[in-house]
Image 1 (cartoon, rainbow, N blue to C red):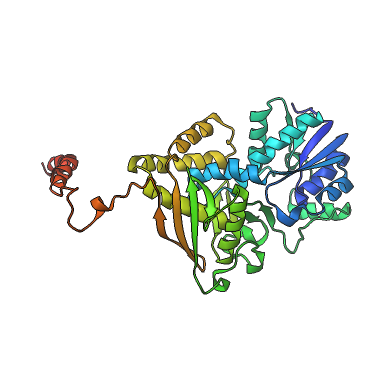
Image 2 (image 1 turned 60 degrees about the vertical axis):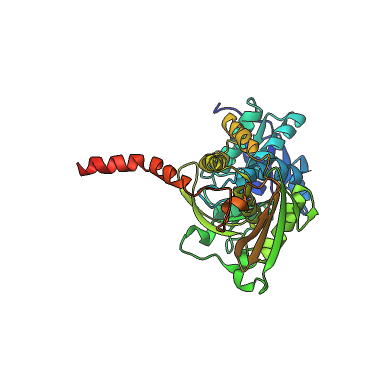
Length: 403
């Protein structure tokens, strides 16, 4: 294992600081005969401009760019939304969900190219190394992985910037603004630099997808999201594709200052890490879906989902998307979504978000039972026996304590 030397490598390439240098390093320092660059387009926007030319100029023999936006949202983001997945109660798993779809296509290209290894730019401290490699193992157990951050000389991003300058590699990061960013249709993440001090407030000019609440419109924005079987299908009555819906909600929610999160999270490798995330559309979708479920799901089914959500989120965060336990849990989650159909109406205002309406043809809310007015459906005297039975163990315990 330790003396394995890959001849042909497919690199998960973004054109950012790490992978730009890794591409050069694989050819000049590692000694690979051929490096093929692959970029999965999961919604990086302008980050893809000039990417192929840059990869070829840096030493790649080819550069594959695949549009994965619809697949990413449909097959990865939406299933997690159906589960209401939040890692440690705050993180909507933007990077965690993008890695398995990118790694899936990385494996496909490696097979097509006849490569004997894949490579990634994840550091030895982070979660992405685990996500890339567990996905590779799950989809092709014979394919090797080269992880430069775990074996090469540079130990910091400052050293990488100097390496890039020595080799005339253009990178979008400077010593003055050393943020590490990851962008896709679900979010943008920011780490590193001044953000490594969890007491330091992020600079306003760092944000891309969201306005600050102070600069958001003075008029509330009302918004209606339609769902079918747990998946969003329309915004304000207009149907669109999964990626189209998320893109539109990113604009609407971002304009109104919704979707910023600043957290200290627990990485899978054991350390704490501070991350700042912009997830405008995803935040709205999560909130709208959760509120529609309160109308359409049975109490115990909802409670069971809520109890399992942290485990689901941790599986995804830790890189186990292609694991039997995540797939089994997804089957359970999806079985609860058969009647999560209807609409949620939201009010967005200066970073805040409120539910102001929900409706469904499968609503379990019965106004004839819930009303505080006179009704002929609910016999209030039944509550006496219900309460006494539920209180039996408490009365017994109290008597024991008093004896």
